[in-house]
Image (cartoon, rainbow over all chains, first blue to last red; front, side, top):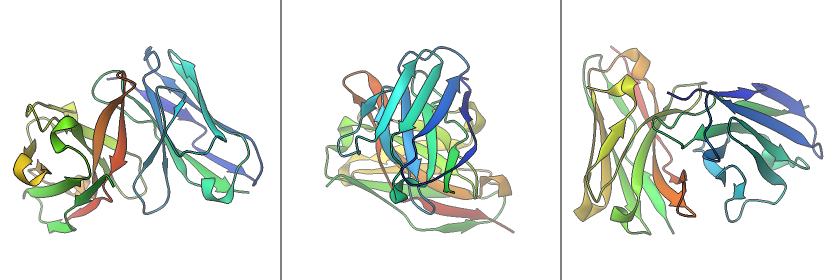
Length: 107
Length: 122
């Protein structure tokens, strides 16, 4: 199975900050990397697929980059509604494993 | 609009089985996979497996092999997850999610149900 490791596990930031979350795969997954946002008590929401393609309707302050084993989710200017937990997921091969999550909290 | 509506919360005793349903609407049910993902309280997301309603093909994470069944009833656009031999470790929220291949390449889960809490307790 492909292991996905996110860092940091948690992050405190302020509205307006630029924030980066990283995700590392245990083997190359090309661009088969998705990012999801989950708020407490809610279902996850897809933000980015194919490592950098923004789902329609997702604000442009979100961006994804990377290929192979190392990936980054960047939020250019944090908004109050962005405080949530973010998960990466590889869709290169089954089982489609998730990272352990990065909890983004208000500083 | 595209949505997945899941069945309500369930409470089961250890050793029992649970069956969760996921009714799809707003798209052609047979054109996309259904994935199942679970989340224990305060924990991360765990992918369980997928099924294709058109072909009936399935694939499961090794963790669940032998005690998970994924089926569908096309006539009512509904997918089902059945998990047997339950233990307290199976207490979690179970989500169904539509699996699509965006840009013809990149598999992702673009629509999720709101989740079904399952509690396993004696």
